[in-house]
Image (tube, rainbow, N blue to C red):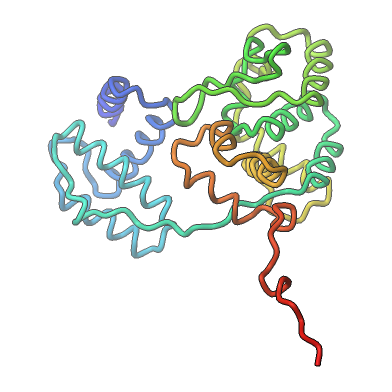
Amino acid sequence: MYNEIYKLIKETASKRNLKDSTVDAYCVTIHHFMESIGKTTLDDLTIHDVDVFLSEKRLVGIAPQTYNHYLSAIRFLYKRLLKIYLDEDDFPRMKNDIHLPIVLSKDEIDVILNATTNLKHKTILATMYSAGLRVSEVTHLHYCDISRTSKSIHVRDTKSRNERYTLLADRTLDLLTKYWFEYGKPMDILFPSEHTGSYIRTDSLNQLIKTSAKKAGITKKVSSHCFRHSFASHLLESGCDIKYIQSLLGHRDPKSTEVYLHVSNKTLLGLRSPFDTVEVKHE
């Protein structure tokens, strides 16, 4: 029923070079939108339909991030396919609740790696932490992206489509070398799926991380992004300039990197409370 609409969305999105994951998410959301309002063709859609749908979502109390995703997908549909402008005053984005990232200590990172007995899985996690990679970035690494000579990793398939270079730690290189020889010397995809030979599914890797953290006895809510957060925070604590960290992470907006000022160990940063610097006068 919606195949023709999906086709139009994908054709329009390809002209704007949107990532496949974004396009797929838009298709799922637009399907949900049209089913919810009981419409099957684009010609029947109205601005009132958007108001009804989004009002219902607000009433059920969905998370701002989810609401904003719905709005982005619908705005794309109306603006790009229907040529109808949705006024931002009438359909504003919801303000996101800001939560500080969860950061693991270096000891906690080591404990998780030690609890990960599978060499391939351990190498993936070590690469994520030591290079500050997103889960989608580590799964899309290729053999040619690893440079032994410059001790760097070329990150190509990024969220923002901006290629970058990041760090290749000696410990990670040792693990990568051992893994490469023991797993058949992969010359294309660095960490291919054992079942399909293609890229590992990110949800599978996310589950692996949670399993390893639980096995290691870590009580924090560990996710794949914790490794990236920890990489940035530990670099900041070691004295690395925040601009270099921004470059290594591939952040476009400096504000995305500045959040690590809030979660880094203030003692390691050399900061003391002014209360500790006040001279105590004894009578």
